[in-house]
Image (cartoon, rainbow, N blue to C red; front, side, top):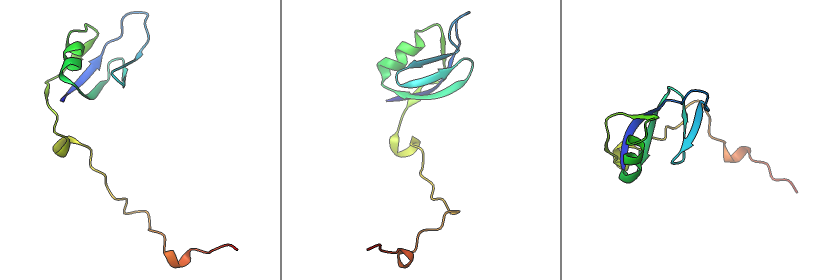
Length: 84
């Protein structure tokens, strides 16, 4: 898998939003993309997409981290009421 930041530039009089490879791109907005190398090559060959530096994607290092929400109290099981 490869990763890069990709920017879509919409053609004149065309949609400002496009979906490709399961990612929604907005005109002029840089979007992080993770995909197979062949698909990254397709993006690089498309004149409407500017692909930044391409590097290997490492899920262990690059995957978004799940942060525990400290603001939310955990429910106390003693407070759970059973309805009969």
